[in-house]
Image 1 (tube, helix red, strand yellow):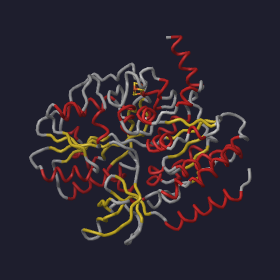
Image 2 (tube, helix red, strand yellow):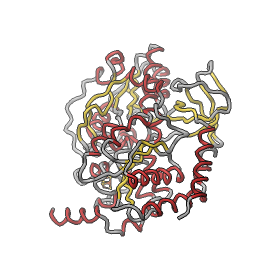
Image 3 (cartoon, protein in one colour):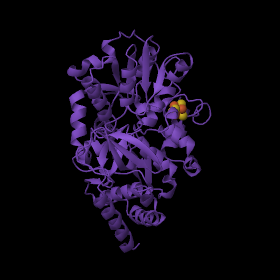
Image 4 (cartoon, helix red, strand yellow):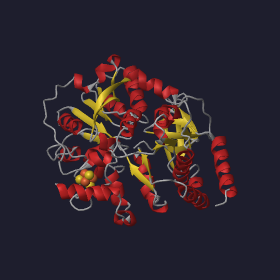
Length: 384
Length: 77
Ligand code: SF4
């Protein structure tokens, strides 16, 4: 397929690996590169990129899976809403299997009779609302800047068509504020970011200037093996020269300014707010809520949801996985009690969750290698 | 979840508000409401959750691939 096959060329991959190996030999210390996009997490494991890299380049995953970063409180409220009569609950498929505080999931309550439908686009939910005027149709919006303009456009369409039975539960989150928080994490010590390709299609490479101000490298990277290896090579270049700048490797999909029209649509419908991230807590201005003008679409205005005491499974270490503090196989439950068919936490549920990705594409060499994180994990166990 | 697929425009619908795109052997309809530049038949679009979000700069893509090949060919380790 065009724009995919060329970026899987074995010849280019070999050349880039040679380049990376040459540059890695010049590094004064081991470096840590974080990716913050679930599609990068998947591609890196799927193409076996970690095992191709020299030992002094560590790739870790951050909070790039939108389903995984959704707070347990939001999952519990969604479960309550989805059980209401005359309501059709819609969202993307990945969300359905995330467990709430009391063992239920949207998938389980659907089996028990709740009206829950998966959709590919928020526009499908608007169409459903039009076709079912006697029902309230709720769309649970999750995702980063790639997805939120599409949901904003659906709200605009519903508004234009005067549809009054379409509602939003907004869980949208913003990438730069959480990356900012991670830069301050002493425990993780990130040297460079593989910046998310399609989030950047919308927000533009300009959005990452704050990263290079802290002397960390930033490269907006695509999703094929050639893209990822070139992204890593460009990070090495910056770290070796000491001159950091926001580079765009993924030039076919991203420019400096981003998609201004999509941003305008997003800003017309939503505004930034302080929101809660799983494992990372509250981060200022890191999420979106509906603007007052579109408040009638907010499901919270139509239901008073009772207080629910939410609690994530204490044995699940998704919070640490999502912030790059541990890797999935450092969790005692990984691959034993917790598997994709019987997931404990959201990182094992979502296709793009780090735990599910590591389970699907195991890297025996890495699991056997006693790295810093395995060591920390052993210390933690000794002291607990 | 933020993955977007590159597809080629093979038709327009509903007063050019929708495009039919071909991704490999599958066809999808996408809204053009979020695109910030004009498009024509055979253009390649990045599509996400029912919307086209970017027109792929075909020339730029070819140029950067050629440049990458040149860099690799000319660097000696
Ligand atoms: S392996 Fe399962 S229990 Fe452990 S962190 Fe991942 S999702 Fe949570």
